[in-house]
Image 1 (tube, rainbow, N blue to C red):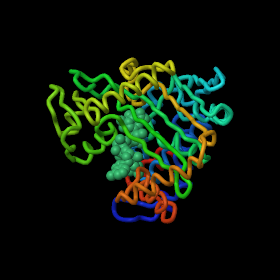
Image 2: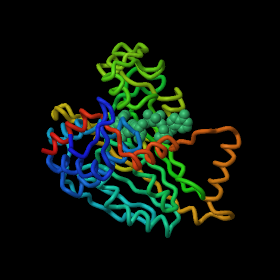
Image 3: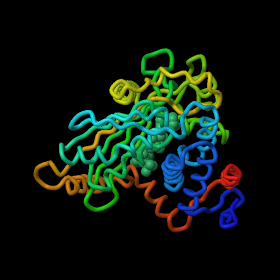
Image 4: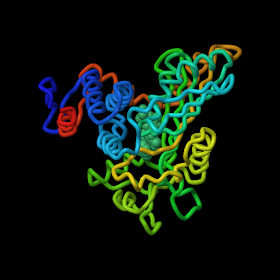
Length: 344
Ligand code: NDP
Ligand code: PYC
């Protein structure tokens, strides 16, 4: 553990956001990424940890490193951006991570969205192993509306089917509002994210009912039974299943990426990152008529609060972020020691 990391209790230590980004950057570079890719992944991973999005923060580092070591992903890939049409940008991530592909195309995407009112970014040949909100929130911070979908790896049984086919396939949405942080939600279309099943298994906890099935297709609350030959269910029965199907179509069929069932990592022991695709749609709401969109979204939030709502999606993250930025990120002490070890 770093000399600067005060101990919170026997299991957690505090680390500053910038210090964590720098540490993760060193780890990524030492394990085979380019400095540019490391900067993007380190910021992404530290942001998740800062916001209390634990299933996609430092918890993911062993998976990133085993994947890099397996040769499954190219940590030095240079994305290739193509200007396809007035509202359509394509990126071949070149078997690298999706976030550097987004970064490479972001300027062109925003220019197109601002001139045409809407633009689409289709990323393929990409690996996404992170939370999706960091991909959309920055657009809303600059006044744009953004929607993104990414497909993952086969582990979800479509509603009414007998075996897994879909990925956990998250959908993230971000919209500006006049008075406060953008409205952002980010949710897996499975009843629970695969990462949270792994965390439950590690902590010896049971899952809530209705999340998954065992290898015989029987309902189970045992996370190990889900992970070892079992599968997850979509959230909300046929409704979540339809959304998951939509994610496969938009993130894979429309981008030219793999469906969640189309890649085979068996020859790369240690590989954990889904090799699929990602779609982003960015809208410039200044093209609308009447009151500004941000004022309209603020009015919706006001009415939701007036109706008794206490927690908006994103509220918990922002509260956790504010506390982390003031006091430091409380991180599992063993995980932090491991990061220092990996950083050499
Ligand atoms: P959660 O179910 O924890 O949260 C989903 C959304 O609902 C969040 O925006 C959350 O806001 C909000 N929310 C949760 N509880 C409440 C509540 N009581 N009232 C109001 N809003 C609420 O997320 P998931 O478990 O579905 O997904 C976790 C993460 O896993 C996501 O970041 C997702 O992108 C990631 N993931 C990534 C995949 C990939 O392939 N890269 C695949 C699958 C998942 P808040 O954040 O503020 O709690
Ligand atoms: O938590 O389901 C998940 C997940 C899949 C890929 C990255 N995260």
